[in-house]
Amino acid sequence: MKRLSGIKIISTAIGIMITSLASAHHPIHGKFDPAEAMQLSGIVTKVDWRSPHVHIFLNVTNNNQPVNWAIELENPSILVDNGWKEDSLEPGAAIIVAGMRARDGSRQIWGDSVTLADSGRQVYSVSSKAPAKPLTGRPVPRWPSDNKPALGAGPGGIGGIWSYPSEKALVEDGVNISMNEYGLLDNIDDAARVAPMQDWALARYVHRQQRQLQDDPTYLNCKPPGGPRQYQSDLGLQLIEDKKNERIFVLLGSGNRNYRLIYLDGRDPSGQVGGDDDNPLYYGRSTGNWEGDTLVVNTTGFNEDFWFTNGGLPHTNRLSMVEKFTRTDFDTLHYEVTIDDPGAYTRPWTASWELSWLGGKELPFSLCQHNRQ
Amino acid sequence: MYKGLIKGLSVIIGVVFLSFGALAQEGHPLKGSWIGEWSGNTTHGDFVLIVMDWNGEEVTGMINPGTDNMEIESVELDPTDWSVVISADGYTIDAMIENLELPSRALSGSWRSSNGRGDFEIVRQ
Image (cartoon, rainbow over all chains, first blue to last red; front, side):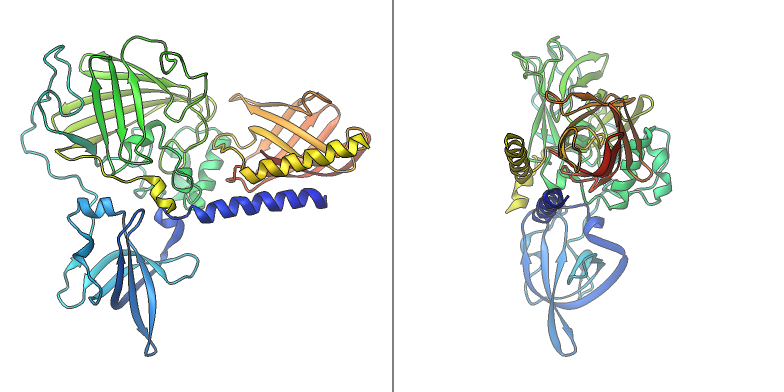
């Protein structure tokens, strides 16, 4: 078995190499340990403002010797959305940082809070709450041609995107489970309640959770956020209705600014007009129709190369989805998805959440491939 | 001589495939094409290829498709420890999945039949 062991060593080494090369962006608990809380005080030496994560470099005096630490923060797009700029913090500033230390013991921490030492003012703070909506719900915009609800800005409207999903990971409707923004369960014993998984799927989900989601191919390899995951990103999405050609473009702010097409022209679910050679896809093949004010979309033809939700629930190529999009008022999109995957689940199940309208906002220029630089 | 040459070339091809990395497979962990060895197998040779699929109820597949063609009769996967038992044409393979989350995960263990037994190790391509 000497030769085979060599092959395995090579494959394992390649896997580890890929993992380490691609570890630039990540669910934070994969890299940082919430059980290792720490606080640092020091002088800023540099602010490195780039995707996928902003870093502050900090000189901390230890035994009269300056020791440099790296403080990792959110994506620049998210910081900008919260009103921060690259020069909101400048070298020479004295700051206090509270956060959690890197699991590998290196001098890195995730910055939960960054406070100016002299004034006590917080910088680079981030809110995950959607902007407040008008007290009185504004009416849904409609297309004059067919009186259907507009899923975007609508006729004559200014641009905008849908963002701030009220749920960040798939959980069956009616089940109340606590998890973080990356879909990491607060209590692993809740795993079996998330969705009606087959035994192997549950075991694989638990394994991914126990590894703190560090194997997520969306972060490791820039795999597209296919399936319902595209509606779980804070980077948002845009729905462009091409009425003339009876199709809808779903433009994503996450991943590599991918797009997905939903055809409303009555075609078979075969992808583009000439088909797609029956290749299974990240976003599948989607056809839709209106049922009253709700757009109903059927999608099949998924590959198995990606995680279809934050948190790592598995799926197979037998997955089919029925999505329902309902704009309940001007500022709210209700999204509902029914998962039917007899390869991974014991029965069909449904999850739903809402997205908020950010009028006038454009998709952030955040490319996953930039993470590789 | 030819047998040795073919085996050598196959291993080289396998390593070349590995150097490009296996295709991702985030669904059922046994699904895919696997290449490796069942060492000491005087009947079918040390080199083995296995193709497996998952239909939602059972794992199906073939050992050495196109050459020795042994249809897999049953596959038992225990997800509590990721142990696997494969039965085909008088063979029983007991193995464990290693590096579960890597596309190039491995199945490592032993094989046995009425003609012998030995180590078993295959890597997903």
